Length: 125
Image 1 (cartoon, rainbow, N blue to C red):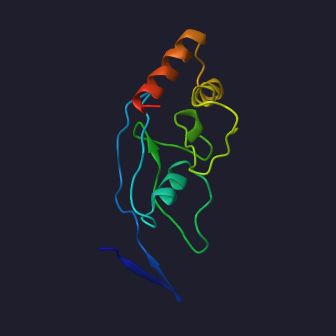
Image 2 (cartoon, rainbow, N blue to C red; image 1 turned 30 degrees about the vertical axis):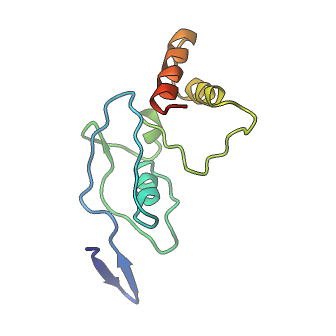
């Protein structure tokens, strides 16, 4: 049951509380839930993007490996691709994953191809 909080003349609905999780290195994670459940808000907070809805706020710490990360440090350990990310429509899935791998991960050609093949196989593309 969502908790509501009154601050001045505004009422806020709590959408996430005491959240924590664990992701192994080199894993791909998807967050699923119904519309309005806070998926994008949660990811925006984790990625330290200031893209919350007007009137929204958050408080707490974002930690990676049990260490509080500072503004701008999220990209050193993780990547967040928004659902409406703009990708070149003329590229194949393999080309898009290879491009994303080139700009995010420092792998050589063979390692990159193996990683891209693995993701494509896992997603049954």
